[in-house]
Image (cartoon, rainbow, N blue to C red; front, side):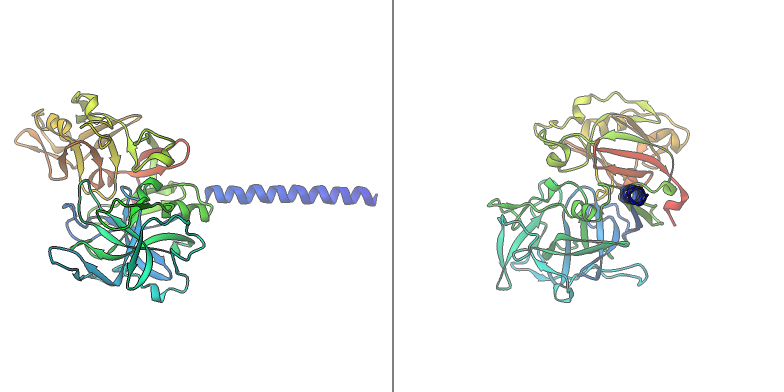
Length: 418
């Protein structure tokens, strides 16, 4: 009998352990964190310094970070960051200053004030292939630089570090760039840093602006942070309105923030090699046409192709760091030349036809003297369509980076704008 009891007890313990494992695994699979997504100050519809931002803790210091789905680098200034410009040498940089003190930060990071910092050259997390050694202040560091926008010859530069990144109640060690130099008017207040949340390939960085002598390719910070916390490789956001903040959810979707179902469009390879995670620079999707009020304008599909213009700089990307909707030239002209008649602004709503999803976007065109006219929220582009803030603010957008990789669009609820 004792043997039977022991066997029964053992079986119960195994069953209990198995159940506990399933429960913990289930909790990890569904774990997520939702935090506020704040709107930067200013009118926001020029191409410099616009964005929505999160407040994060880096090495125990609160920093304001522009949330950018069109790049992959996390970078912050320090109290000694300088501004580059037309002067022969860098000059002191007036970093953004908050106009209020609640839920507001300028985003300055001071390495000397962090007990958890680790310089990239000495970190156990750092690979041995730092190909961008630079000397800063007499110290050898692993340099980095990022130019934002196609063909830009200015940008941010500095050196790579490691420290603890906290978002909500979750923390993890990530690599990031300490900016020693930024362009004038780098960001509008109150966010002076940037949090790129695209793919690893976009985080291959030269040592200085314009350098082609080598690249250092650390793991993308969002990927590191999600995996270290056992969170799913996905995030979702509602970007708020021009007068209201929004929310971002890391690790999944928050069901209280949307209604109905998502319309998904696949993320496609934008370098034509490997998997999406290995290959992609951006969240690239397939657009097939543009329309007015739900009706097709029958634009030739090749203008939306990746190789339009003779390079892989075509296609359509979803980019929270771009303020407008940029339509590739022929698509923009198709709308403006359509001379669509109207009686109200809603007759002029732009329709974006994607593979698997159709977005009818209000507020980007108006009915003027009986004819539809595009607003300043829409601009023409040479080779690429960019679905930016002007479109994304109308949806709860889900970036599912897992298999299958996809971007989903759903109707936001009032809970999105607290």
